Image (cartoon, rainbow, N blue to C red; front, top):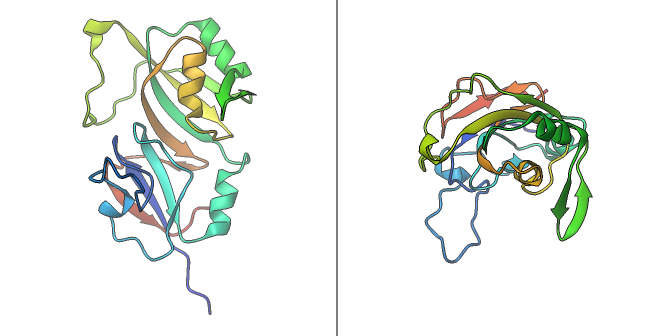
Length: 192
């Protein structure tokens, strides 16, 4: 009988690499996934969050599940703090899709679900403080996408004139960040 696959929810903190091994030579002291939990052999991250992004990361020993979740069939929701008070026009542009650069080529993002978040969400303070209100107002939006291009959400908000200051993934499909705290790992029975 084959071994049962294992799955994990992880609240990736700011500054952590979404990988187990770093091939960086200049920043050898960066924290990686294995610094937070003793994952079983063969565990892989499903998709990634860049070093400056936070929030829900799924890990599994099942490559088939990884492929399914990375597909366009599964929504990924992000709460994004942007520089400035985002306009209705910018929200509309994000909903309809914007042109960003992917590997030096123009790419038109698929339509997205986009909402202004009021009041702003409450997250634990991150290790590197986001600038404060003395430097101008900020606003929060929820952006739900079905694709996952490199740094896509950051590129989308920049394309409409509201650069991302903080990005937290809060949902992948039916799985939510919930009450997990930064650096916390929760083994789960299934990803379905």
